[in-house]
Image (cartoon, rainbow, N blue to C red; front, side, top):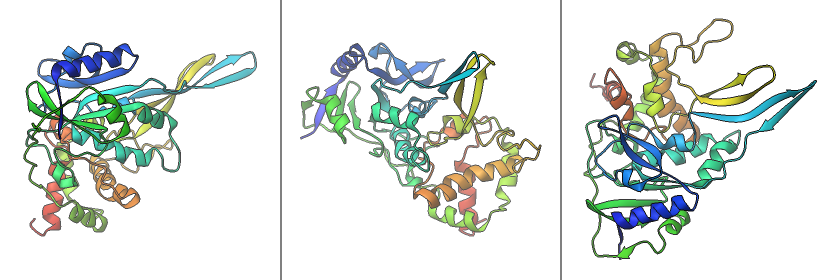
Length: 336
């Protein structure tokens, strides 16, 4: 029989977790009608509306935008290097969109590849993800085009499905999800509803095969003319994971920090010699699409995209990746 929880009991659960020392995050309103995943101290501030699309991604809770990995200090003639403190605090993120949570199994691959990234892995182990199934999709959603759905379970420990404004069906998928809601729900005959899946907008496999055979595709010359190289698409993308490592401080002391980077920046591939193998925006856009739909699937067996549509929503030119993929698919199908 389905299990449900109402908003009052959900708020109580969140307060208990915060009081017990758990860091809790969820969707909150900011800057008018924009909504962000943020750490909260008051559950009343959290928004559980499955029709709202967040302006950021939950990847920042496992892969922070800026994170120290070690520090250094000079003591006489000795250089003392200390590892960053391990991440030990439990954290729960509520109301995550399924397309956001689906990024986690994808990121797991790259952060446990030839090098075990303990910073990501420690946060991943300490994080419980509670998704909120979508009840509607907008014009930028394309989760079905990459094999996902409005109620995808990938990356989620538990899922809430809206029954009405104050009541949710609760489904648990992992031990962490079951432990979170243990004793907090009631049996009910009611079940939550999900959105009508978005129509498939392109054939991902056909695009992959086309990209393998058409490296110098002219589509990128045309679409990149709209791109200003701001990198916003990569920062809101739940699966983009490029980073730079820099030393911050002086000769006496400082720290080594891992910071987000973006392949759409002109300096991303600039060599110390002055040579830049991707000096122009078409090459940078080609690299982004190739990486997500050709290189990553070939290496890890997963598309590096969840169809969230954030890249188009944030783009000042309304570009993002979906319009480019649609054009590539048309060419692959011989329609353009």
